[in-house]
Image 1: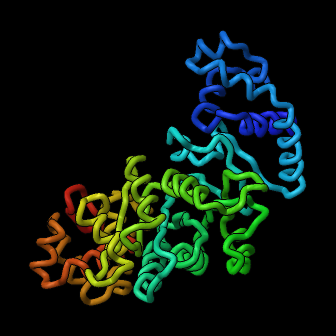
Image 2: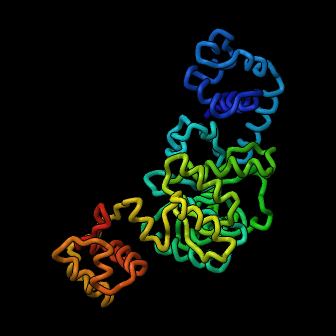
Image 3: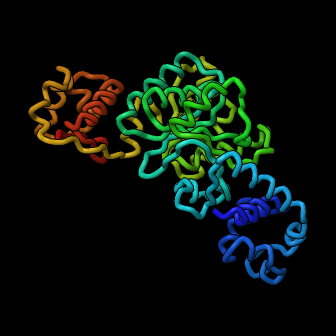
Length: 364
């Protein structure tokens, strides 16, 4: 992007009364951002905007602020992308309130990748910690991108677990990229930038105000195919993210907890009110998302019984001459559904079975 063009777009963001929705409407009705600043009241009326907005375009100070920010961006090697560009997160692009601009650092690569958001309470328990690590270990063969909010608790655990499993992870911030919040997470800056990066819609002068985190959550929900809530109290940012994901027609998953655990009340309520799928393992996510795994090279048969456990061999033999429902497989083989789901995912990753619509499975 040309420096002059960046200055003009940043200036547009500073015009009073012009938010992301109006800015994108202006972009769609003018050939360039420079042309927007030359528009008259008649043109604004034609596209359904109030001519009163034009007063804000006459404020000369917006270009001074925009130039200072553009200089900072260039000096700091921050990448900038608009909602019109190919490297803008594709799913986020289709959200009506998506940011006009995104600023990023690191090595983010969104092409042809499954993107999953994992969020939760800042007061994570050992249960939430263990579940998050186990989940990402199970999902690692799918090589997804893990998105979270860099906050205390489940967020930073998700980032860490992603890095430990060699997965790309993206931290979406509620402040400018020149600040670290919380400061205790400064030690994670380098590993996250090396294994993904940081994303923000905020200028360098934006401090981590409470309202910024609500805005941040729409990016976390909007850019992902699925949002997973690991632990959440009755109220909190995680539930806001879940509601946003539902509004964007994304799949939402919640990890159940004991009825007496305060940090599981939000998850249990999401499941109870059918605003989230119940998640007990990675198999639930793979099944609901109907994700196709990479086919394994054949012949499989030569190595089949070397790589499968005795119990997996039994399930494979059972499915060799039939297609069967998950519940039926569990009943006829005396295996609890929760354990069977995880087992079937492992076998799918090994390329010996495949899921079919309607909770059916068959041998490959």
